[in-house]
Image 1 (cartoon, chains in turn red, green):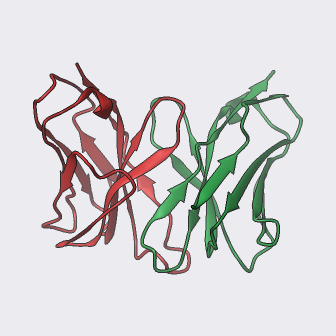
Image 2 (tube, rainbow over the protein chains, first blue to last red; image 1 turned 60 degrees about the horizontal axis):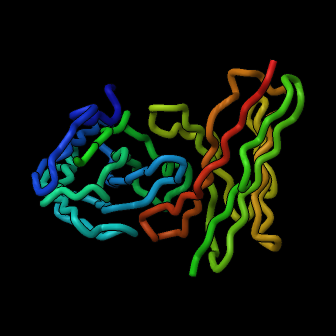
Length: 116
Length: 112
């Protein structure tokens, strides 16, 4: 299994541009998450999904959108990029959160985004 | 509001000593707590999970305790090695919440 994969690894955007961060998992996990991590800080939840067709806002959803049309994919869309969105973005997945021994999150390698 | 606090300062210890990291929380009733390790430029990696009815969990040189009265978890690395140098994150979860809340992490440096 490849686990959780994210593309691209790095990206530089100009203010006002848009882009989609891709996330795919091959572990048949039903739960997926998007986090952002600013330098020296912890993970802030942007959006999450408990299954295909279901998404919900996390702690910092403004400026982002998500969709979950399949179990495997959970893309994150940035509209009108702003310098405040400069960060490292991590996608994660887990199986049936809330169940014994199946709550571990598996993280992707991250996407480093700079908005100038 | 819910708050999670990990060691406010980075932790520097000598090789062979025991490292102890803390995770305190307020206004939260977690069903379980997880510890992750994060190396620079990489995503977090799961280490241990402890449930609210468990006092202690061990895995090789790692030990986690969970005191719901004190609202605190302690993470211990015994016989520490330079390879243990990383940032360690705690995450709290409530049953049915569908999501975790992460602390800001503690950076551990083990000096040879």
